[in-house]
Image 1 (cartoon, rainbow, N blue to C red):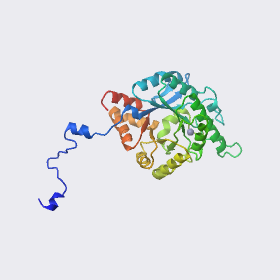
Image 2: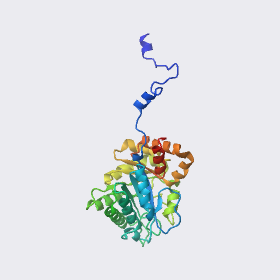
Image 3: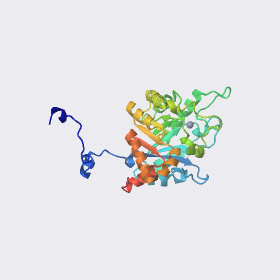
Image 4: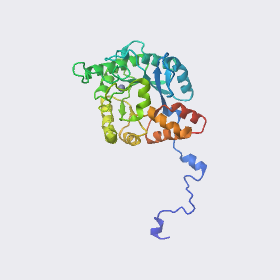
Length: 325
Ligand SMILES: [Zn+2]
């Protein structure tokens, strides 16, 4: 053997790869894959007397919450994110602050059924305004009323915390809103986390918006959400700002069309990242079948998600329990 041969690439003459050929070695070098503990499930709180439940998993009436979360808990899913179908909607989102409203009833129902379940809540105006927008607007010129919107978000967060929420998730991407929520919580709820959104404009929110009535009556949210073509860069800027304002974790949505953004966020941020596989993704994922759905969620974990918030959480957990993940 010459000195040059010694450093030549090693050929595998028989195609055998030592990392993969023997089961014991495959197992030895295996890295952790997805477990039910990585999953969180959206819980869409609907009225008890409403229309038949949606086919979206987790869209349940208040009266079905206890049964649903006990089932999830028994499968190893230890987190839920609550969204409430609003009521008493008006221009000021007054219903959001009504004592005993559907969100507060939902939080209490989860905690009563499974006290250990980590509860995150959506803090946003769009389920509660009659115009379906996330923000409050001034009656004279129609511009965003920042002061009133921040006051609404801060007060909602405090009410959710009082009802038992562990983490609140300001959803409208308004600069300053995360700080407003953090400051509001600091008075008595310092231990409640703030998990704002990094949201791209996408069609993949469709089934959720239709069910929950959060489509703006007029216009759209492009002024608040990240433009998809720039999201690889803008998401990093937004995430850094949220952390500066007091966020202790972040949610990225959607993920099916933003896997690159997830990877970049992971490289740039040390806070926990929640990858939210949205309602429109669920419609597409169903075509993959259970094994494909598990594969997709495992890919999100590998891409950097600490938590995967997904309408398919129960399906994934069941498949893993069967040992066929
Ligand atoms: Zn909203």
